[in-house]
Each structure stands twice: as C-alpha cells, then as structure tokens.
Length: 307
Image (cartoon, rainbow, N blue to C red; front, top):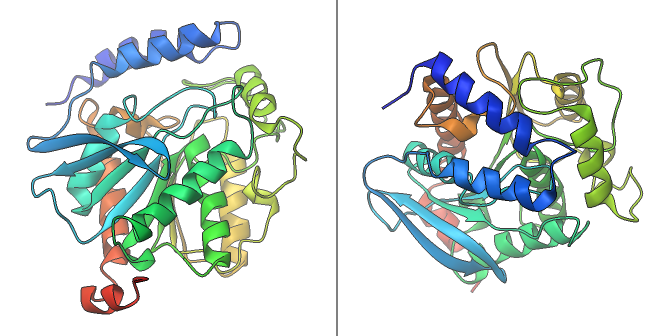
C-alpha cells in the first residue's frame, strides 16, 4: 500500500514548493492541491457521502459499517485559504477506520473571501448539527484538525465548552494556534515558509485583533478544554509555537499528550495510506480519540442527547 519514503518526499516537495507559496496565485494553489489529492488512497470498505452539515458541504466518511455510535468532526488544514475535504480524504478515511467513528470532514468557508470568524462559525454550527440533526451526544463527538484546522478545533472547542457542549477529545496535528506569531527561529520547513504563513494569517484575520482568542486560541482561556493529543514534527516551523501551546494548556489543567515525530513533517498525516509514518500517526490519533469517545457508556451518552 505504501510508497517508498524517498519517492513520497520527492513527489511532495515539488507540490509543496508550488502550492504553498506566497507568490503562486491563490486559484492555482487550490487547483494544485485538489489535483495532488487524486493520488491519495483510502482503506478498503471506505464510503464517502457528500452531505450538508450546519449549512456547509461536508464529507461523511465511514469504513465498514455506515452507522456508528461515535463521530469525529474533522477540520482540514491549509492556512485558512486552501484545502478541502477532498484534499484530506485519505486522512479522514484512515481516521474513520482507527476510531470506528463516522468522520465528518467539513468544507468550512475560506479566506480571503470569508475572513474570521467565518471558519469558526462554520465549525461550531457543524458540531451543533451533529447533535441536533444526527443525534450524537456531545460526549460522543471528538474534533480533530491539522495546521489551521488544529487551531480552529481549539477555538471551536472553547466556544462549545463554554456553552455546555464539551467535545469528548481533541486531536491536534501541527496545530496553528497563533496565526500572527512570527517569532519562530525557523523561516521554512519541508512544507511551509513564514512568508506564506504571514500572508494567510493576514487574509484570515481581516480586521480582527491578532490576540482575539477565536482567531488565536493560544491567547484565550484554555482551562476546562477536553483532553487533547498534539502531534508535531521536530523540524517544522511551528514546533516552538506548538510546544508553547502544549505547555500553556497543561498548566491550565488540560489533559495533554504531546508527541514529537522525528520522521514526519508539518501536517504529514494527510499522506496516510501513501507514507507509512503518516498512516501510523493517524492510527495513533484514532486510538486516542476512540478511548475518549468510549469513556462514557453509550446508554449514558444517549440519555444526555437533547430531545
């Protein structure tokens, strides 16, 4: 199933340098990523259904049985300006297999057409729709995301937790929790560079305060958030920011598990099914999420579902 690591690196490097480049026109960036996603693979038995969730298009992904007692809301990465459920379909499918859950991969609104708080509003609305329309209890829904989607997962979890709808757990893959932070000593890694990051941060921020916790959850309250598993690569630009966020969350009393990957790169999980390390990393995230999704007996969770 998996391709040799040097081949994956060679193919990916060219794509990353072109698609995730501040000088490449936005329409072309999006097109390249969508075309590259056609090379992705999914596990046997994968079923993908296009639905509407909270007013936005969404992939409903299952592997095996199509009815499951647990759900994962997945928020794709891409600097809030590129990416889609299609670009992250392989990741979503392997996550569905590992969690035994229905994965709902949301096509939230992108900047610059829809700056903050568009993406956050969509993520919160999608979670609420999983409760009101799909009959999942909040305690049987986890939120996961990579890069911008990881930061968005934290921001959405803060809103939902404050409203009494705490998700079961968070799976955060190279999370971007402070988009306007430009103090990393590294200017680029295998996937992204700081110029691309600055451009995307400005596009998404719009007129918002760069310390608005909905935009940059690093600067908000972290106490009371769900248990979280954080993955990052040891060589990525965001590593110092990710370590800082993990430390702040832990200090706030959050149950934090941090894993630093020496052989994976920023959001490399998107290559699940193609790169062995990515598949294994997604499996580990799935095991973590499933343990928390199943922590409350199904009968108890069902009793707490709003009528």
